[in-house]
Amino acid sequence: AKRVRIPHLQEMKARGEKWAMLTAYDMYTAAIFEDAGIPVLLIGDSASNNVLGNESLLPITVDELMPLVRAVSRCTRRPLVIADLPFGSYQASPEQCFHTAVRFMKEGGAHAVKLEGGIEMVPQVRKLVSSGIPVMAHIGFTPQSEHQLGGFRVQGRGDNGPVLVEAARALEAAGAFAVLIEMVPADVAAQITAAVSVPTVGIGAGSDCDAQVLVWQDMAGLRTGQLPRFVKQYADMHGLLHKAASEFAADVEAGVFPGPEHAFQS
Ligand code: KIV
Ligand code: NA
Image (cartoon, rainbow, N blue to C red; front, side):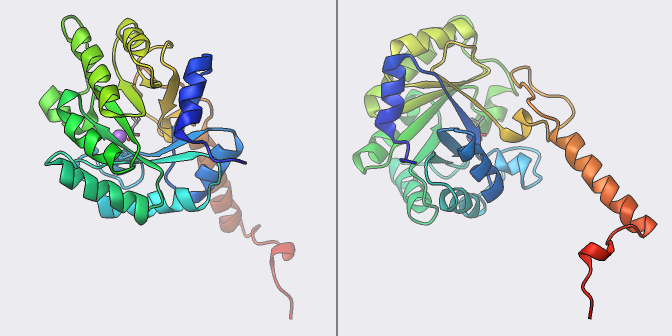
């Protein structure tokens, strides 16, 4: 299968074809998502609270995310692999951003990076793009700024809608190849999508975005408990694994596993 590249995503927008993006953090899930035809995989900093056990996205480091990026890029052939830049690894300056992004490309094998922020990230995006590093922008609710934003809240209501449209335009002009829009009213996301010629990727941003993304553990029902409104569960992975582990334990306790077919004879 031929590698998905940035121009393919632009062409899909021009043709009005929607596409799906998922997070991936390891080899088996990445390979399954590739087989399922997902064209873009994101190694999100959401690995912080979906893989590493942290309560938020803030603690994850570049060194912690790097092996996950490497795993996904090694075991896939077709999807575009995007590495998320962790909190604190790019905000300080375009140079800091450049060095972090280069590590994800050279050590991690990523094809592109994603960073959070609006108009204030234009210098970072310019620096990366002028260095040959494709960048996906991420606007609206930006989880790395949860403390600044006062928690997980919808962004872009009222007067802030036009601010987001302008941010998307500025990021496109700076060279971003796509704009991810998180937790923004559907009508505002539709305005943004119409205002830029690069694809928009929505999460909690309604159905008019050019693409949609979900965290795979949310999409597949591995995570339980209170879920954000924007999540749709397509499977019950939690139930499936819970059942398998319980049955394994019960078999061992009952002496039923291993059977003769699982044992070696002398
Ligand atoms: O880290 C992540 O999973 C993300 C998604 C919400 C797009 O940034
Ligand atoms: Na992220």
